[in-house]
Length: 64
Image (cartoon, rainbow, N blue to C red):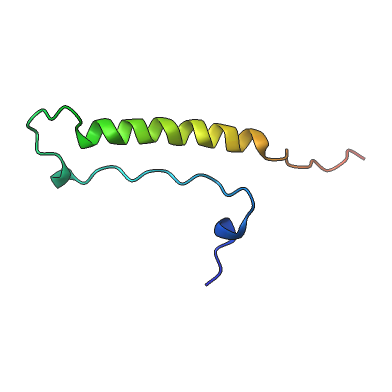
């Protein structure tokens, strides 16, 4: 199977997966999996915005 995103010179960023319900122990860890996910999500959103800014605008058909 061919993955066009993997072969693209500028692939779209991939969103992080949220933690599964059983990954948090609910004991107030200094670095909770939910905190790590929030940081990953922030980085993803920044990377996605930068990626979108690099993409060419869709061409519009000329008005006749």
